[in-house]
Image (cartoon, rainbow, N blue to C red):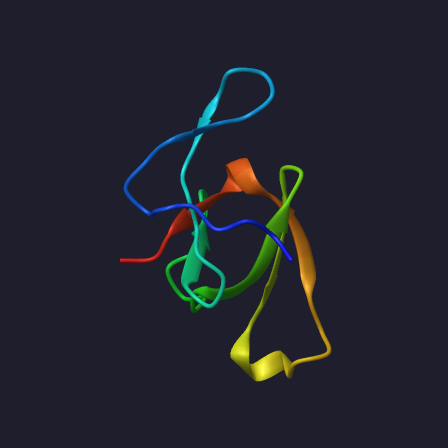
Length: 74
């Protein structure tokens, strides 16, 4: 199970890059997310990779995305 961190504290990636902390179950958008596409639900993140899904896809369909491409949905 991925380790949880408080939402307010920054976390550094291996290369010294600061990445946004995203909580499983929250909704996220791609950095270049189209306006007509609903946010993704975050399943989990580990090792710089995150697994997301669209609610319409069902629970068995997931997409693996680089963590740096995601941001929390407002």
